[in-house]
Length: 201
Image 1 (cartoon, rainbow, N blue to C red):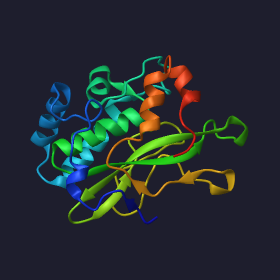
Image 2 (image 1 turned 90 degrees about the vertical axis):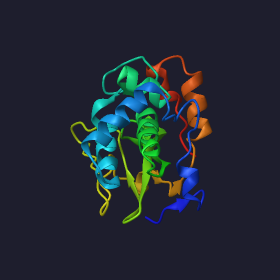
Image 3 (image 1 turned 180 degrees about the horizontal axis):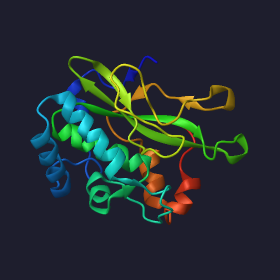
Image 4 (image 1 turned 180 degrees about the vertical axis):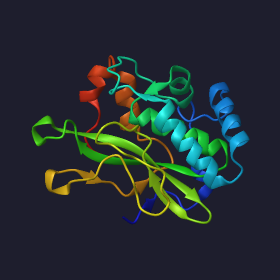
C-alpha cells in the first residue's frame, strides 16, 4: 500500500506531542538509554523500540485490565495499554532517538464478525534513511496474531478483509487522532473503551 504522509517535513515526525508522546519524561528517557546502550544503528534501535512496545507493554484487552493508559510515560510505568497507547510508546521512543515516526490506523472488526461492529486500531509508520517509510504494529502477539519488525514485507497484527468492511487507512499522521484520544479520556474504564473506540477516521 502506498502511504500518504500528512507532512513532507520529517521534522514534523520528530516532535513531542505533550502529554501523550513525550521523550523527555523519566521512564521514556530511561527506556531510550537502555536501547541506545544495546544498539548503535537507527534500524537496530527502531527494532528494539518496536519489540519493547510490542512485548514489554501488555495489551490491556488481552489481560482483561480496567486500566486505561494514554501517554507513553504512563504506559511504560504501568507496563500496559491498548493498541493506541502502545503506538504512543513506540513513537515516543523513536522520536526520542531522532527516528521519524507517525501514527496509522485501520478499521477492523471488533470481535471478528460483522455483527460485532467495527473499531479503529492504531499502529505506526517509521522512516529510516536507507528504507523510507514502512509500517509496524506493536499491538502485541497472541495466538493468531504475529506482528514483526519488517522493512520489506509488512507483517502486521491484522490482515485487512475489505470484503467484510475492514479498511486500511494509508495516512501517516504527525499526531495521534484526536477522536481516539478523546474517547480514551472520556471512557470510564478499559472494558467500556473496547466498545467506545471510534469506528472510523
